Image (cartoon, rainbow, N blue to C red; front, side):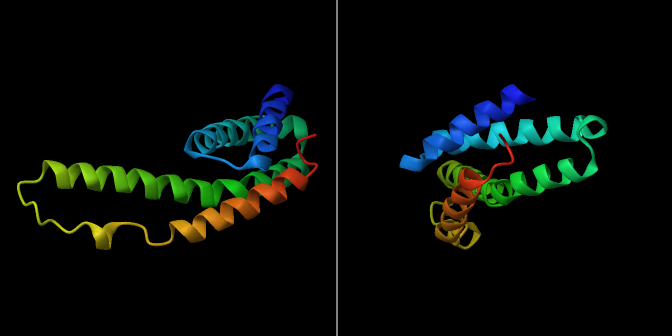
Length: 120
């Protein structure tokens, strides 16, 4: 668990200079693994500590998960449009229109998590 937390800390520190899709993907995987580990060790760490850790992780996980889902939806829809016989297929209404808002939430969440002491 400590190794995973240290790896997560390293990933968080990399976000100080900014982030790209690859770093976000690494963060997502790291957080998902951490959350599973934290929940698995519930009986060792105690309820209050687990709840605090999960809440901290969810600060970033929720907007990051939604951002990832938007990006996946865009890839799928673009692929469907390319494969469609109907070349005038309009996928625009199905695309996320709040990716900028999600990016702002991710930036804010990253700042909060970098300033947090929960993973030390």
